[in-house]
Image (cartoon, rainbow, N blue to C red):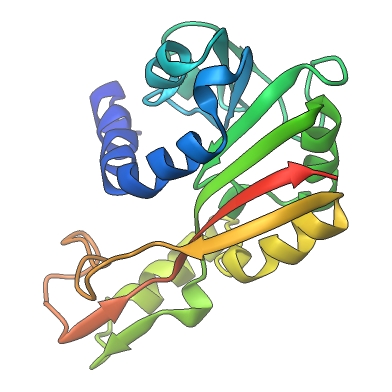
Length: 212
């Protein structure tokens, strides 16, 4: 089992890598005008203090893993995303990052997010990968495809990036989507393989969705 500091380090590195696109989306979603913000899949709460500080009101963190959630600061509660313990129209903004990768009940989860958002509410779904579209040349035995296979073995939907836009539209959202800008070798952390490939890239997608 990873230590608390190791868990914090994982979430911290994810937060740093996606900071630019995340902040752009938060500005477009007018975080500073939001009274109530839900950080869904908050994990150790790495982003919770920033969301809370920048919002007009406050931010609440939710995660299904109580062990990880105990490391999070500020307001937080344990819950399943497909059965959120909040009233209708409770939040002006729902924020997620690398969240839908791990969601098995996607239609139910999106329906719950739609339910708890105010009529003008927005969803940010940041950093959702599509490992089916990755590029790795020349391939290496312990490279990105092996990493994607390991994630799938753990229950991740490694192609969720290509599915989420349509699923959001079907759930009653107007959707804008963009891909994460990265240099080709940025997508291959040293933990994937001891070798440096000539070219490696994982498509990560960011979504800004508004209730219809």
